Length: 341
Image 1 (cartoon, rainbow, N blue to C red):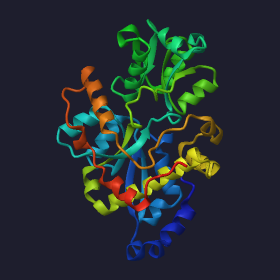
Image 2 (cartoon, helix red, strand yellow):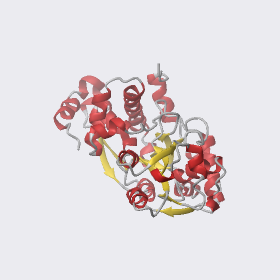
Image 3 (cartoon, helix red, strand yellow):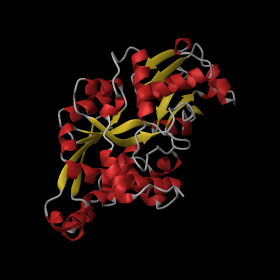
Image 4 (spheres, rainbow, N blue to C red):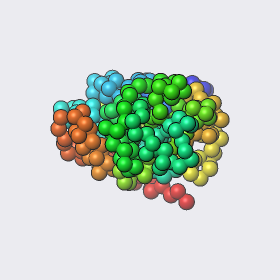
């Protein structure tokens, strides 16, 4: 999966030259946990392109398949950094006084960069996306969890076309099961993300009817965040360096998918980490990764309000209190604003 041991060893050996006296020390291991998805591209690229190594960091990966598991790992300092979906559990944890901090973006939505989409069975698609959404009244739709930004996006998309949540039957199931249920006609559609999204469409099981960018809260909102554990966030120098390297990895991703710079090389790195075929990644819907690591507070407040309306969160809080932008600001001061031109 890593495939970079020899080259990475050379990078670590060269730290004394690159980083001065600090570089002569052994690299600091930073434990990063996520579901191991294409949205981890910034971390994969920061690692394989040497940005972590140049700042004296060695990245140790842990795959945890659920948001609750990731939150627990960060709360207990079992991991240093985690990619965590914006869920009721994340808000609840911080409201209980647990000092987790959202420090950056691991998956955001903007036009052309959205790999979480509403799909339907081909038989439900009438050639008109708006009409197809309106025809979902009375149908069953799959979603991984009501307590997810995917469900938020589904609800907002349906509402835009006059379909309320009471007009459909919501079935909670894993992404792979959504595809299976659509294939056998048990459900009419659902929310999918890549690689499941591209696989379902390529296999003729699904048709995409909304990329959801038009209903996402304004300002390219993050639906998955980079979260620092309390212990790691307090280690300011290392935490700043991690974000600096990560921002460079995210920019390498944007260079590849926005500017077509080193696209093949980037795709091959992502394929090696995710065990996906490069051809599948090439034709997938690109995930949004903010090159300046901005966090949209208004979007966080909207997600929190949605979960409260569903009864999944007892109370609201000041969303600004769970965000620490200082690490991203420090990296931005080093690198300057990203230019997409």
